[in-house]
Image (spheres, rainbow, N blue to C red):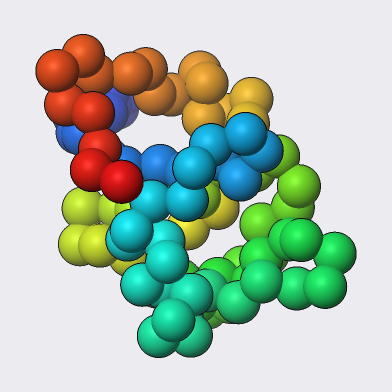
Length: 88
């Protein structure tokens, strides 16, 4: 059996060159995301703690849960949605 992903709109943040969105600031404040001394992040996900390396996107999933995504996978999987710019 083969499957295709349903089209889903998510919010994402790339710490390299993007302003920090409010939802990410809130996650830093509540401790679900922790910035390490080297600028990377540890993220509490539904599967446990995951590490976001430099350049990784941090995606806010359907239920508001954060998770890291490697840049190449992110760019193959997602594309910008015009007219739905996130609130900063």
